[in-house]
Image (tube, rainbow, N blue to C red; front, side, top):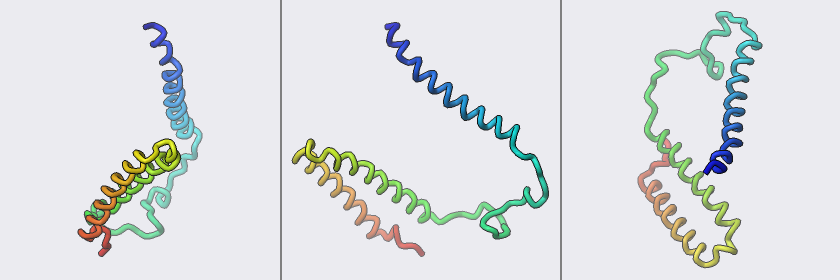
Length: 121
């Protein structure tokens, strides 16, 4: 039982080192960095365009829908890579499972095309 607890010491040391590095870097950069402030430097800046009006403008839901769909199809690629690497070992069973996966994905893709979720107005 005690040897199991000792096996977590390297993980704890790595966690402490990572957190310490991040905190140390933030503190040191704050102390060593330049502290010159001026009216021009403190102004809001975005793409060279002067900001006008309220920053809390509502976005279209389509913007978020496209972002979620991008993540969905990006995750699909993550599942395709290990399958392609292990294709020979998986055999016909792996091929059938991938056909089912891709079929479900294509059904969803055709559904969003039918609903015109990707048409930008």
